[in-house]
Amino acid sequence: MSIFTTHSHFMERSALNLYFEPYSRVRIGAHILTMLALLAPFRVQGQCEPGQAKPSASDAAHAAAPQFYDEPQFTVAGVADATNLGGHGSDTAVRTKETLAKDTVSLIKPEAPDLSANLSGVAEKSLREAVRRSPQSFDAHRQLGKVLADNGKAAEALVYLRRASQLNPSDNDKAELHHLLAEVEEKLKHPLQAVREYQLAAEQNPSEPYLFDWGTELLAHGAPEAAAEIFARGNRRFPHSVRMLVGLGVAWHARGSYEKAAECLCAASDLNPNDPTPYIFLGKIENAGTVQSANVVERLARFARIHAENALANYYYATALWKRAKGMADPDTTAQVQALLERAVHLDPKLGSAYLQRGIVYSELGDLRAAISAYQQAMEASPQLEEPHYRLAQLYRRNGDKAQAQRELQLYEQLSIKATEQAERERRDIQQFVIALRDPRPASSQPEKP
Image 1 (cartoon, rainbow, N blue to C red):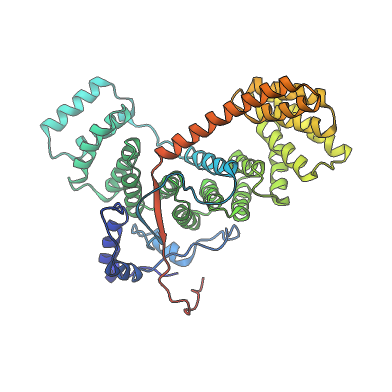
Image 2 (cartoon, rainbow, N blue to C red):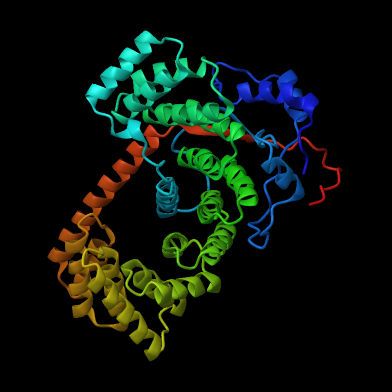
């Protein structure tokens, strides 16, 4: 793995400035590509490597230095069609990728509240006065910008935070300021600028929170290749961070590398078996049918064992067991699945997906009356679910009740249209980044030694 030397610092910064220029405004010519080829890349590992518990010697050396060691191996050249989400599979797989990305963003830990987070409008007024009295005060501009952002005035906050960035803050303050700017840019729906600020914050202070936030921003805006690079680096620097491995797993999943995703998520669950987060992600990818692995089932079994009072733990394990049986479950497995699902709906009566799975089990066992009842319970618990209507229509048709079957199919189609329209609206709102992966080394070059 190559590390930048001092003489490449200028080129590193110059290339950084190119990352976020819209493609319509910047034509990357041969001279720029040549410059990029001179940069030492960081190659994403071909697989999730959960066995690497220790950072490399170069990482250990750079942990003491605030610069951002290796240049990321991607270029954000502009904005692409937001419907082109990458990866493979049906609309269900695409929805799963989008859901996992959103769930990963939810793992961002809010910063510890400080005084400014609770300031009232009166305090905001006093900070404005402080800025007026001391127009060269970094702290006054930063505090006012943060308060305005917390109060939902993102556009105005941006003015004061940018001014603060011009007032020669300390190194630590620079990292925090870039991070604040990133959050504000994201609120203003400026993802390219937000990613740039997250990157600058991580370069100034490559801490676990700043690297994770950078990776999730890329992931949330449809750049899983770039996100994988950041999460992989974060995993090496912070090998005990559960959420960093979760992020890496979700990035692999978004790229269509489902087995690698499962490896990362299993490794994350092994880091802290009591943390429910990795198991929930495992349950979701298993439910989506993108991966079938005994390792995943084993982890979900542990989830149900450790978190017996968690409705999702019971539901995900039951679903995994039933899918693994493929309609040929023995009586003991069938009884176990039914008991797990019964416990799941007892713990969370609003868990419509658990009622849905009960209906599937009953239907495959030939108990159509119980299946119909379970599907109706699923619709009552989670009215937005589409699948119970479709399955119910099939059962009504099988029983000869064509009118009921038609009504359920119409409801299914209405819900499907709403879900599709909502997904399309969200996709249009997300300005997906164009990612140009680069590896300038000649094909004949020898692989780098680990």
